[in-house]
Amino acid sequence: MRLLRSLVFYIWMYGLMVVFGVIGTPLLLGPRHWARKILRAYLKALWFGMRFILGVTFEVRGREHLTSGGALVASKHMSMWETLAFWEILPDPAIILKKSLVYMPFFGWFAVKLGNISIDRDGGGKALKGMLRDAARRGAENRQVLIFPEGTRVRPGEAPEFKPGIAGLYKSMNKPCIPVALNSGVHLETYCGLRKPGLIVVEFLEPIAPGLDKASFMRELHARINLATDALLAADPAAVEKEI
Image 1 (cartoon, helix red, strand yellow):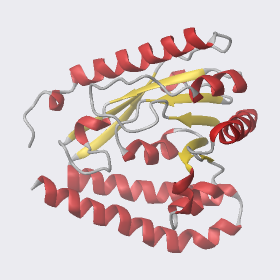
Image 2 (cartoon, rainbow, N blue to C red):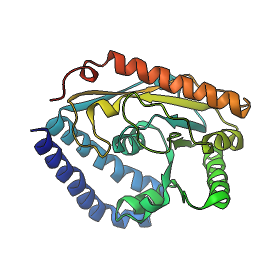
Image 3 (cartoon, rainbow, N blue to C red):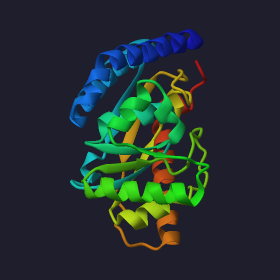
Image 4 (cartoon, one colour):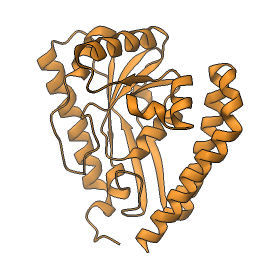
């Protein structure tokens, strides 16, 4: 049953992507906010399917910690879900994505139009400098630069060390860094297949002010994200139930 529900949701998710992509492609010729509107419409339809097909919903906590201007947002990463969800949750995000994603039909086209930041993981120092430059520009535009500092999706309970790029962003942007905890991996597989119905919680934590040295920042960020994530996992009944 779980596999069937996941399959139906995949059809829903990617089918919607094609439909909204075809409808919205002409909007790519207009201003950026047109693309944001069609994306938000797609996400509303996607959340409906997630609730109806998978029995998974989500809520956002700690919005009071979102700053009014530019910021660096560093989030736990357990599923493809949050890669999409932050486009609705944050006011005007610039998400740091793998460069390969921008070549995907529809998804990649909109990612470019929305001013996200792509990085070639094999590009070495040149790619890192480009990412830092683009992130500083987005921050100066009062946008939220979102990064998943673990560099890849992890399973609930895993807490690998963060990639060093997050420290470079923190220093170059000179903006507050807002940690984010979540529990999406309890309910969704890495590519949004169903694990267990229930409630995904996304929690913004108290910002880390700019100015810390690299070691102190990395230690503080890792501790805040993972302690808060562990608390969400401990409070989630589905995290300790037998798999359905």
